[in-house]
Length: 180
Image (tube, rainbow, N blue to C red; front, side, top):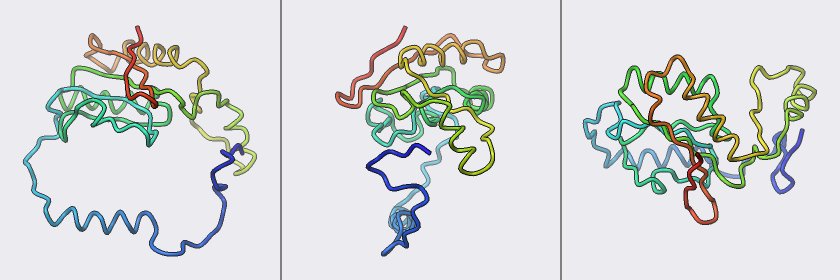
């Protein structure tokens, strides 16, 4: 399987020397909960928007878009591509929770750029089972944003497709570039 050279192999079997990252999450959550107050927010986003974006850890969508807690539904996956599961989430967001607008955000330097379906074949050879999902890799960033917008606009499950816009986030400048 293709592994990024500066990253450890996913099969590396090293015992953690101390608390794991998840252990630190649990500790941080306990500190957070001490001062947590239920603000009485509804599950319906205040801004009536759903954002579909890549899961890349460099994207701080709340800061980049000026969002506050409760403003938007944020749906993230590898590449920020519109898959069947993304349509499922958007359908629930619109039909059950009142969103009307959809922003699609890809980004420069995405790990899916240049990845191929060979990834699935290598994975199948490694684990002995072919994944049911597609990699959804792409070589044309702008083209994939357009394809994602088209998938949203043509979905029979989404009643509100008049305000669908796509962007590329530049991980070096923090700026969004709109795709027509």
